[in-house]
Image (cartoon, rainbow, N blue to C red; front, side, top):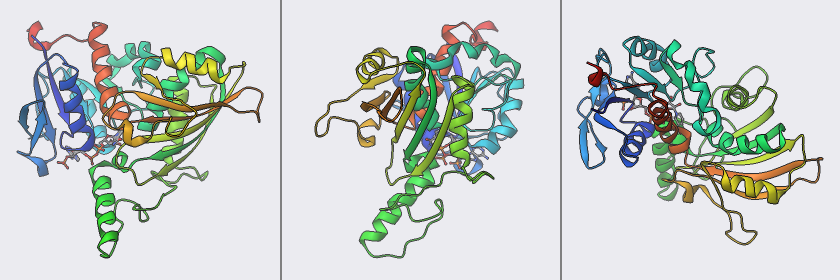
Length: 344
Ligand SMILES: NC(=O)c1ccc[n+]([C@@H]2O[C@H](COP(=O)([O-])OP(=O)(O)OC[C@H]3O[C@@H](n4cnc5c(N)ncnc54)[C@H](OP(=O)(O)O)[C@@H]3O)[C@@H](O)[C@H]2O)c1
């Protein structure tokens, strides 16, 4: 008997990708249930060649469900994850609601798989922010080799990171530019079509945005509290795929060739780094792919031991759905969950 899995937020960008990833990876599910808000009651979503009719989260009984993969935003998660967890169903949450709770493991399987052991305190496991997940897959093996002191990162984040409304806004504004229609901005603070916006999530008192703070706080929680990280997060008119220009300062010397060799062997990483026209990855090529791509690796001669590089990944996959499904697989591999219906 396999697992019963609920996908909450199944009609959203991440939820739809979650269903794709579960099916593609042959996740051992006997039953997959699609859940969303009342607005989506009966909406059809694809799960492989099957079609699921969306049910409503409110009052759904999770007592015979083994796993709930949640991507319905922080408010929904704050209200629902503890209730679902108390029904003996393990929640893997994509929102920011639980990431900084000391009783909730924040996991990227390639980075800190062993931290998953503490999940049973709340039956909740948090998935990191999309920009952090792809960054840490790369930083982890480099930190092991040469000890990272400081990271300076500028992100170029796609509109799908702002949900389906973000994608619709880029599409609508682009169309409006071409047909000379009036342009309105609802989801983003300024026009995103043919523009870039240096602002993601709310402003904090120190002038950084919450998105920038998340990258710093999540890196400390998952990789090493001693690493200093400063970020500038920017929204760009790309549909899928987040890119990052990253500068890393190390304690020990490490050359670009050594870093390339380390990353070629590192799980989840794919080095595409030819010093010629087109010898690097762009977000368009990362869409629909599982890997985190690393290009433009070069030594930074302005510091004693530093590297600069370009990191690109599909934010809906490694940044969300793929990482969540990998966490579910890790629970099974380590024997941390078994199907309830088998036990009955
Ligand atoms: N996009 C990314 O790259 C990314 C990466 C990492 C984490 N995340 C996080 O994942 C979550 C979802 O992101 P998204 O991009 O998929 O957003 P989205 O496209 O806007 O989808 C939101 C989903 O949540 C559902 N939902 C909203 N309110 C609900 C309620 N009261 N009860 C039940 N379901 C409700 C929506 O259902 P309806 O269709 O019925 O409204 C929809 O299925 C967010 O917390 C986001 O921060 C996103």
